Length: 88
Image (cartoon, rainbow, N blue to C red; front, top):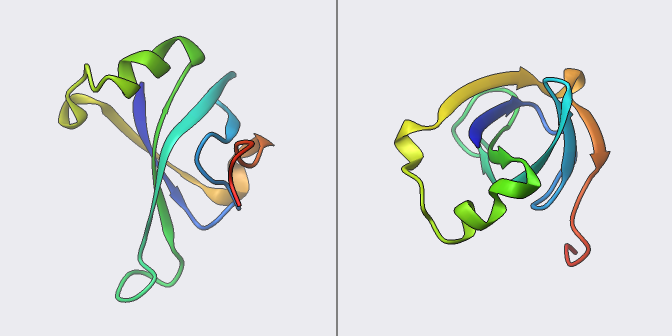
């Protein structure tokens, strides 16, 4: 599990499936930053992980400040599924 900062908006929502670093990852949460007083383009701050790590995320059995954080441009992100089944 790790944090991923996406510079730009690739159009993903919670429960999106992305191909990141050669493996399929699920976006457990997506927080949109920078709409009002931020940079020129928005940033999406996501918590991503594999399907096996979802239970750990759901039960909050991790320390968010200790997760590895990386950033990527929205154009470089490979989106497999843009949102979960319940997203509007």
